[in-house]
Amino acid sequence: MINLISDTVTKPCRDMLAYMMQAEVGDDVFGEDPTVNALQEKVAKMFGKEAGLFCPSGTMTNQIAIKINTNPLDEVICDIDSHIYQSETGGYAFNSGVAVNLIQGNYGKITTNQVANVIKPGHDWQPISKLVVLENTCNKGGGSIYTLDEVVPTSNYCKANGLNIHLDGARIFNALVETNESTIDWGRHFDTISICLSKGLGAPVGSLLLGTKDKIKEARRFRKVMGGGMRQAGYLAAAGIFALENNIPKLKIDNDRAKHIGKILSSLPFVQELKPVQSNIVIFKLQDDIRDHDFIQILKQNGILAVPFGDNTIRFVFHLDITENMVEQLEQILPTLI
Ligand SMILES: *Cc1c(COP(=O)(O)O)cnc(C)c1O
Image 1 (tube, helix red, strand yellow):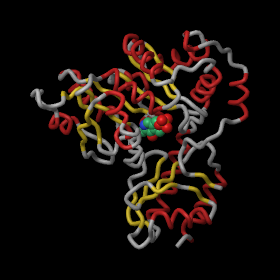
Image 2 (cartoon, protein in one colour):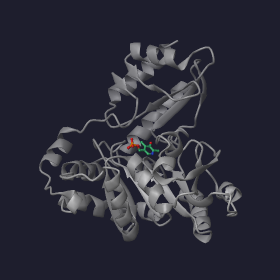
Image 3 (spheres, helix red, strand yellow):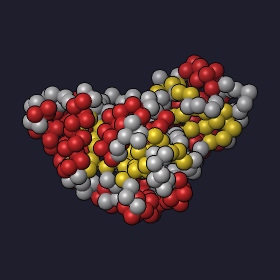
Image 4 (cartoon, protein in one colour):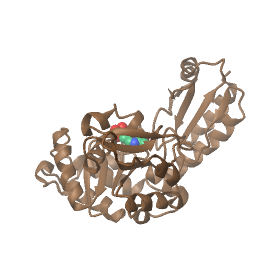
């Protein structure tokens, strides 16, 4: 099967497993797992942040970020398609007691002007605008990429207006291999950053939240209350270290394959519309006479796994466990489908 359901479906390779097996571990709830500590320090340093926190999922790092960057009755400003709004079970309301102020961006990307236009003046009948969240790459935006040029004015605006700014960088490395911008430059412009190890980087589990020492100290408390305090988590952290040391450049291959398959799809009759392909995600809308669930079945009969992605669209995600041979098969199968 050619599994394009998500870049989370990757399984650890033999070398990653071997690296995990030799990890030195301890009890991380006491801060005594040397491998977790090494991973946290490594990623914090990469982004020029003071501290990092290893968490079981990107949902948890985002939820903690919302918690430590807001107070109840504040609001979070984000794109309407953002993961924190669409795919985290409404956790912003449940965990942090905050509202969302949704912006219709351009393929998931929002501008400084759009943010400035929705800031509330702070009447006592209004939520207080407190946190801006940007997502890079934007998953539901079709894997679209922000450049630094686009985010720096928003970051400066936030700083000047007393707003915090968080980066949901679940797939930040898929963006950086395209733009060749540095992690340090990105780190400078955000109060907190989430990154995922279990997407294209190929680790089985794990995300990191980055920020100041004080913010991460607070984050540790919320990780604990969410049940995310893990004990000998160093085996999992080792997978993350291995992923960061070996798999970042490979993301470019995923991005290139997505662009290549996107190009093929754009000329096929069953595709009504294709979101611009900038990284490893391909989202296309089917013609109205083909229903997404039927199309998923046709794909499956042809050895391809994918998911419907809302509004009669299909998402393909390219990742580490897709081989060149699978890409060749896709080239041949896709034009024959309907
Ligand atoms: C996958 C993802 C996350 C985190 O998801 P988990 O499955 O909880 O690790 C956060 N943001 C974006 C944009 C994502 O794609």
